[in-house]
Length: 139
Image 1 (cartoon, rainbow, N blue to C red):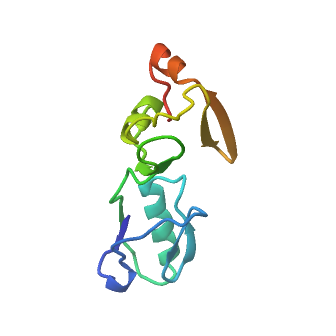
Image 2 (cartoon, one colour; image 1 turned 45 degrees about the horizontal axis):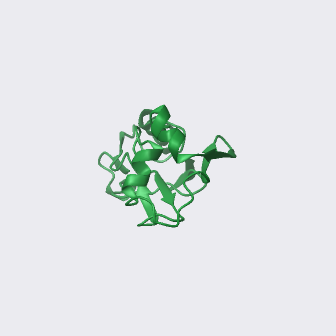
């Protein structure tokens, strides 16, 4: 994301990355929660915090790469690796991204690990069921 503070170049950041703990580091304010809040809410938090240092701060938060979530496809597929997670990506489409299965793949023993809240859920999937039931969604 990009954070711009009007007339305050030292409080403007071109590429702000959200850390694994869901926070960003921002000058004068330290760690600020960024995950789970909207750009408007983050803007308000930054403006409120900067009021102690800047008269009437005007902050703009711009999301540069909204599709920054990633999935990891491992196992007996043609191209294992990290892939972008889009909102409507299905399990079937994820396999297509990975180039399909190798000849040694056990298509009836697919494991999907998914983080739901603070818990990691495990789903066992049979490829034939995905095709038959209409492409189980990952999101």
